[in-house]
Every structure is written in C-alpha cells, then in structure tokens.
Image (tube, rainbow, N blue to C red; front, side, top):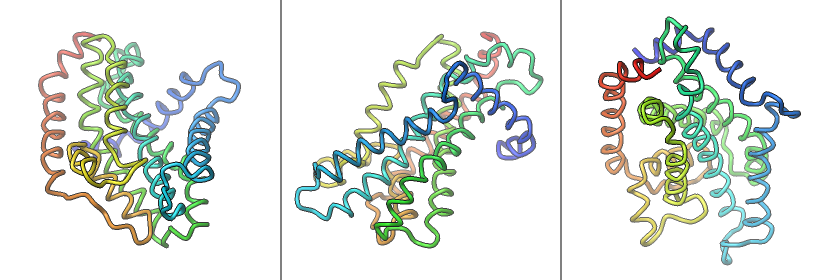
Length: 256
C-alpha cells in the first residue's frame, strides 16, 4: 500500500522535493552543489588520513582496508542525512501540510528521495576509486543501489515515527544527532568487525544492511552479518511503523 502511494504521487513528490531543496539552500551561493562539496570534502579527509597517511592500516593491504572504509562511508553518509532531515520534515512543512489534501504521508517520502539522490551523487568519486582499485564488479552499481533502496525503506519505518514525535515534542533533532553518533561508531566503517567490537556490532540495526551493501558493492567481500541477528530489528521497526500510522497519526494532525 505504501509503495503504491509512493508511485501514484510520484509527480507531486518530485515537485515537493525540488521545493524542499530550494528552501534548504535558499541564500546559498552554491545551492545544491554545497551538499555534494560537503560529502566530497568529508571523503577527502578520510582519504588523506586512512589512505595516504595510512592510519589504522597497520601493515595490512591499504587498498583493501580503504575500500572497506569508502564503502562504509558511502553507506553511512546518505543514511545519516536521511535520519536527520527526515526527523524535521513534517515540522518544516507544517503550514503546507495543513493545506494539502494528501496529509502528512507524502511529505515523509521527501527525505527518502533525497537520500537516494545523495547516494548517487556521493557514489561518483567513490566508484571512480573502487574501479581503479579493481574492487567493482559488473553488477556493483545496480545491486548496491538496490541494497540502499531496501535499507532506506527499512529506515523509513523508524523515520515515520520520529517525524511524528518531533511535532508532538517540538524538537528532538539534538537527540537524533546524538543517536547517529552511536549508530556510526557501532558500525564497522573505520574498523573491522572482530573481537569485542564484532560482538557489539550485532546490536546495531544497520550492521546487517551494511554487510549486504558491501557484498553487493565490493568484489570478493565476505559478509560478517547474520540475517538471524537482523530479524528482531526488522520486526521492531515494522512495529514502530504501524504504531506511528495507527496511534500517532491523529495526534499529529491535532498538533499541526
């Protein structure tokens, strides 16, 4: 039903996405290009530190290690932006939602579309490096995109709840930003999933999606995640989604 709603209102959604970008980057000289430069700058910093300087490689194959770092960043950066932007999307569009016959549901898809677009843009320099390093296969692009699309749908279950709670509690963005820090360091992006860290990684709901993404993106990558460890998170996120749709929806409409 949700996917049908998404496809049926795709044209309206494209207009809302362009409008949201215009509001986000209003007054900025670089406009939307600023988002690309931010992501590229962050990637360049990690490139200097972990590839050229060689921190954390500890004698290991620097290409292999840094490929894992880049794949982790490509997974995490758009996901983090989605989590933060999605939390405030209903609050930022409060007045427009009141006048829209579609209700708040379509506005929740705005950060999802932006998440996919940001992933595609951020992937350009990373794919160039991975292609040079011989880490890409012929199906790396479509399979990794499909993996991110599914991960975005998984996060959308939580995002639907956070966006509604943000209206009720006025502003939970500082708490969400803190949450992203715990999620980031709970993922094996800058380190390998071994020892005590490997045992802690399974408590991160995005650990298995990250391993699936890396398997789709990198040639010869052996995933560490187990789908059995992921299934409880999947059930919890689905429960949160239905809770937000049934219990919180009318409350949110009353607070708008």
